[in-house]
Image (cartoon, rainbow, N blue to C red):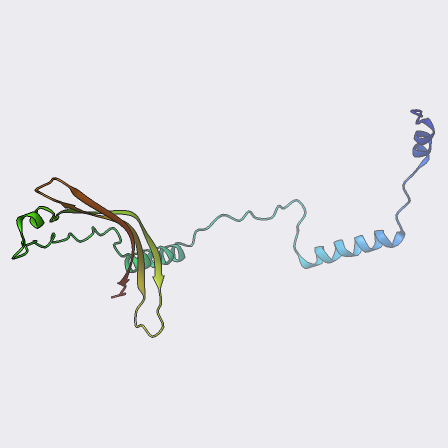
Length: 170
């Protein structure tokens, strides 16, 4: 099975076929045409192209990108507006001292921003200019204390705020 002597002998007998006389004639004619045009290409390598940078296009592209960034930049890292505080609680007139013991007085308010996300530019129908939409998720906690008994009440609730900031290109 591994004896390939027969195959090798057959391959040794094979000889390439002689080219047709027509092939030699066609090659000769094409060589004469090239020589007749006056372009000697034998032995000459094609010219190597060097990398050429288009400085004008690069400069204009960078200037356009910088202009776009300057126009589109809107500060979304604004600090939340500080609340002015809680309203004063005045004692209720004509209430007995037992009822005054059970009054809760506002003690504080805490607002924690968990997530602020810039949702990009939005174009409203009929609006003259685009607006940038910023979504904030917050947790607000309000606390009341009773100064007489020391009891306290704390209420927390989540909220979501969507702010539309007008963007002008001027």
